Length: 378
Image (cartoon, rainbow, N blue to C red; front, side, top):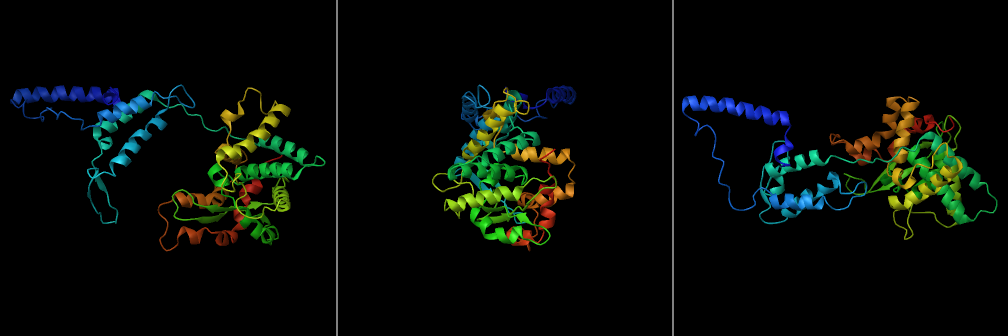
């Protein structure tokens, strides 16, 4: 039924109507048995992917995270998994065709790429629909409340170094996601060693002092490790001290003899996961909810609605629209990320040469405008 109703009802009705009209003419001309190919019989084996479709539906009955059952976006991975496995087998792939532009399309013999299976998958999606729960935007009022709490805690007498580390890293996490408009998988690539290396030069940079937010690692759709610079202003136009929080974090980590590696690391020294960074975010949001219920009501389930993965970036984008930051300023700040998605880069200027820290530093005055215009104290 999923495969039958993958097409719009109106299209099915129109096809049926046209078939009846054509059949009437075929009868009149005596070619009713000739104008359409025979419908079968089909071979007595599964050539369309029926067994995989059955497993596809069986997988959809498993428990989901946001609903009683798994959603289509999770279930559809069955198709790609079977297809990928099939292509490792001798009968899995066919000929490869070279085109004039150098690309090489190939013939796939996987049943999951059959026309019937694609129609089944489309019909299944139409029937199941989607339950989408995006991360809630962490907006300026909530963020401002977070920093009021963090600032008060920082000024508490006789704080341990470990407590200072958590407070300052939480602040750097919020700043990186909001003022840097970074996603969670980018925040955990911020490199402490590179920031320390460029710190003095950056904060004393003539005409444009900035925080050298350096990212190092393997990024999606990139080959090898890359280094990117997302500079942030040290003080925003409404007076928020970005540089001071990073200075506090660097000073605290220095006293703990942590001077290299990633800024957000796990207990083993590796890159912190989104879940591990969420712990810092949830901790401060819970205190905001307790102290400022008018800003973050008790009805909000923090763990269900917020995450470092997207909440900070969504809040940043929302506030950028609210204060009408010009598009060219947004584009200038986000250009390295857009370039990673762009498949039409000039071959003579590889990404590694165009968007390294060295090249980006020459454009710091333009790149820090985004963070300087984002509101904090409205």
